[in-house]
Length: 103
Image (cartoon, rainbow, N blue to C red; front, side, top):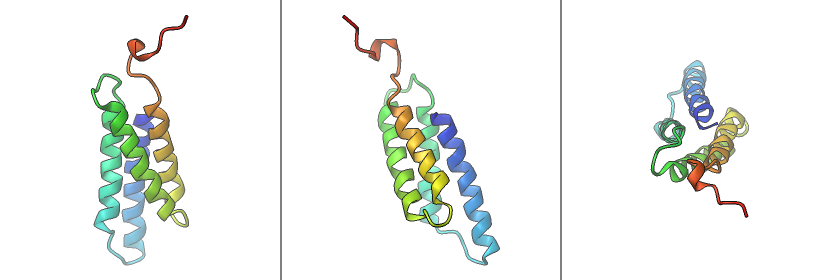
């Protein structure tokens, strides 16, 4: 799920740049920064062996979700989906030892 969120964030970066150029505007750097940072953090969290995986995915999910809500009337929905995927991926345990033992 984290890898899918990263890919979706990168795709939305490309779509955003293309839409802004089509409208004759320049893309806002902070929007590209949030999308890029969200993609990098999601890609980092895609590996279950990373030490701060859960934090990276939660930060990515928060950033992408807020940006998606700000842009909900245009390109925001796929960005919100990427944010939700990151948060859901954060709930997946890193390894079997992270799962509580059943009694």
